[in-house]
Image 1 (cartoon, rainbow, N blue to C red):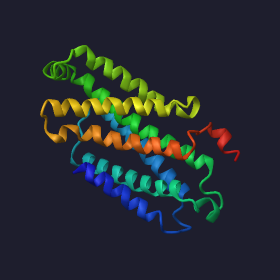
Image 2: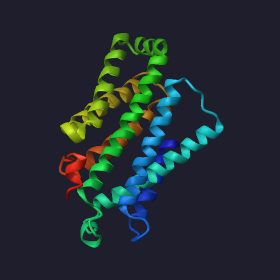
Image 3: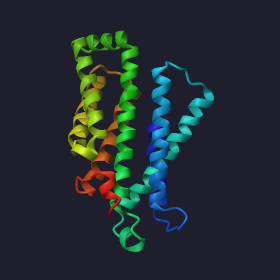
Image 4: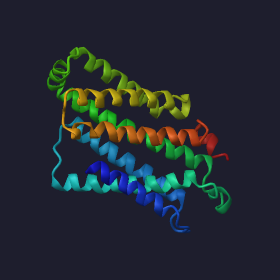
Length: 225
């Protein structure tokens, strides 16, 4: 159900992007997207790191935050795809706009994986048992964690080292492996939803990079344009 809502809010934001408005610009939505992503990611990581339990209000607030993230993401995706945005506005779709949108996606994805890694460490015994039950060595659990953390860092460092594409592909391979493992174990489909959601995020991230020509550049250089 969360996956359906996620795609629904992205579509709503994308459709809103067709409306021309001086009050709601791609730059404003990109700023909103990044701000909510950073705030939500920090709160989730702090909650996970300090082993704090969320309540009804916290869960509701988190759902509202993700709804806002996905609506603003859909809006900026429309701006990326629009061929008329550059000519119809005064430089709204600048390189800095593209840079911050791609960076926001990298924070969203890497934050999710860091959150997952904290959970895996807190439940290491259960994870090792899962790998044994799946016919794999428990050591593979820690190897996968290492690659997930490394690839997540690669996403964050894309603006400097152009490492995002390789990192995203690496994470997609791991997520495919997770889905196949759940299918092999005849686990409930809901066990694969997190992996599917990350695959969607990673696909969007790779699409944005390709639209942008695989470049982001540094903030200071982008703002000169």
